[in-house]
Length: 96
Image 1 (tube, one colour):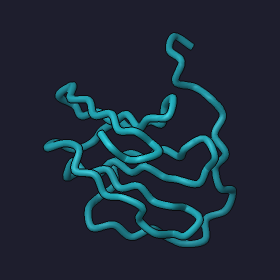
Image 2 (cartoon, rainbow, N blue to C red; image 1 turned 60 degrees about the vertical axis):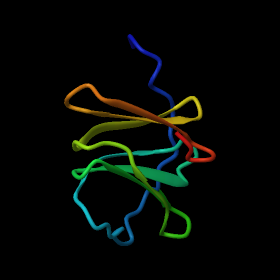
Image 3 (cartoon, rainbow, N blue to C red; image 1 turned 120 degrees about the vertical axis):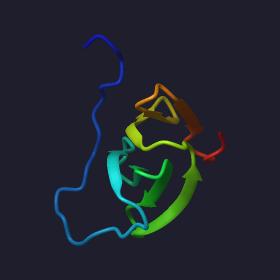
Image 4 (cartoon, rainbow, N blue to C red; image 1 turned 90 degrees about the vertical axis):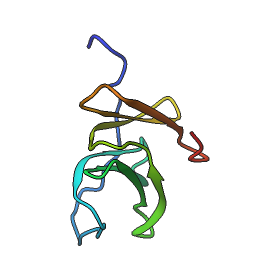
């Protein structure tokens, strides 16, 4: 492990439906408690789903290009595009 991005994440074991979104999801990541799902979309937005209520907690206009990678790391959500554009947002307040 060259970088410190790997840690254990509690993920739901069963699939009991779908989460509908207005754009296509390209990448996603659960927070370490398994309660929030950050989805990187092809229109550059990040959609934060509250997995307990099955509702959208926040939509963040993060990028102009498609989000190709997204991770929860040390209290932040970090996302990137193919043109090396990074976006970092505070996980608790969703303020960039």
